[in-house]
Length: 355
Image (cartoon, rainbow, N blue to C red; front, side, top):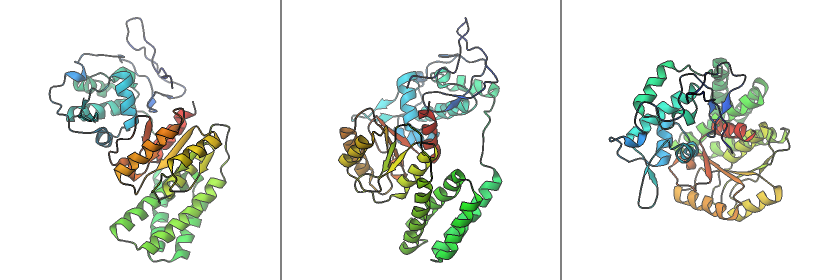
């Protein structure tokens, strides 16, 4: 995607002030950006970030993403397009980053949230970034209202209590209450997705039995399936949603399919445990523009291999998205793969892909 310009240069090379924009714009990394005055596109007063002498390389890109809250996809784009990073490489070619990179990127993230564009601040060093912070205006956010969070928490607690005790009538009443009390979007993002995470965590810790976990999964599967069937679609290229071969946990892929459908895209949900060749065939038959995979139970090595196999048989024009807990373990996926950490990043991608 060609970069969207969120700044206008004046005759001196400085960015001209542009306040009160009608709509926020997005840069290539999918982050909402506004333009603030006093911004330079490149350079600045400090030396290049490459000149840092206290930056012992120790972190791989997945770890860097977790430490900074910036996706690996965005980090790669910033590095390639804007020269934001200059990593060292292992003998095998993996990127390595240091503490100075972590500090810089945390500052960059704060400034992006306050309206700066990545093209304007990508090459600034830590002192230059710190000087910009006091003048940066916080961007207006749209947090989930506390009342919604509190109601969602009560429903989740009731649902968990029901499935833990295998009182499925109680759990079912909680889901009915949630369906009647929340918008479809809030139902998915504030109730069903957090409940799914908590059920998985409790099963892993031994706080609920396998029977309870299976009962909860069945109830959530039914609820999500009904939501998926109820969503209208537009004419945009569909998204195939599934899990790779060996991955039996399907609810993450189903959850992604529902969110995709809520954004007006046709989501083709194929269930779990599908070989790469069959995923590629489904994408071909449906003329899908993207494939979304959920990875939860696979080892990092198996996850990497399955995604690599898919890359070999899927045309380069088809976007590959990978999410789920198994994608958070520092897996070195191929360059073309975009790793999404949670539903907010999926929705960010959907909004970006719409333009």
